[in-house]
Length: 456
Image (cartoon, rainbow, N blue to C red; front, side, top):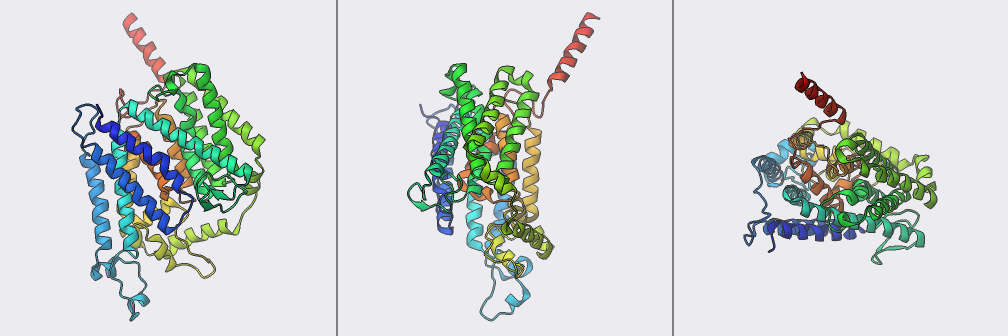
């Protein structure tokens, strides 16, 4: 009999496999379409949890704490998009000259109420998916980890093959910005690198998670080979993207995973440690064979665009009034707000801050900062060392590093994976007390102490 969790897992699998394929043409229209697709998929997943045809594998209702966060973000967004001139004058990021202009009368707190409404819808969809993902049983979670691995490997392989063939198009639909770099089906190599950095540790370790279907039944030799080969392919694709920040973030994520796997080998069973180290070595070996020249050339180069990013951040931090940092300007409001303080020598239209953390804090204000602190606090409170959780922690760490200099957090194909990772990690680890991580050395000390007490 079909269960609510099974229906939700199927809906998630469709989104995981299709959303990255839609990231090849980043325009306002396509981003709106993919955001709508994401919201529809989340709605289907949520409706499926109401299925009463089975009493097994049900999904618990959203908790009070989550409702508080949802209500706070919803109320803030509602106030920001309501056509109330008093709110627009009190909190809107409009210069005084604009108020005096005879043909323009701001009426909403947010300078872009349409983008604020779309951003709110996406946030609600991701929150619902994170909650449902955290409720899934190990069997259904394992299915999602396998699906994510399949799509991640497809992205890496497709990117490598397209690059080698110098294919001028993505999936035969969109023109590639450059044939010199690996970018999968994403519109540019930096966004592709963010996705690969997020999923790389999972692709290496999924072969050793016992609840993953198909893979968990393979002989050890095949799992070792699968872990090594898939890890090498992901590493080569990441280096081939020549994204400096993405490559550094991916290396930070993988090295963190390797350290945790090694440090807690007594908890994770030593048999799974050496294959992941071998996978890391194979990744660097294949990347070297494939060609590290693009990434090394990029590391040695400081372009004008890179220096402009620092100037954009400086202008954002110094020239935007403090009240906007406290109250927020609404989802998608950065683009319009930065235009009011953009220095004359910085050309172009900056639709993103190229720093997701900075943009989040400006658009959501104090409430956004509190939500971020609550998420981090919950992650720390439920921290536990587990073979399944380590790649999720380190993948999110890599994506967090990418977010300090790019806008991967805004890509639906990446958002859904990050939301599921967060949803699982924000729930207590099964079979363990919350926040209880016992190091092997401490465990041995406690055993010796108990032996002495019993002998005495």
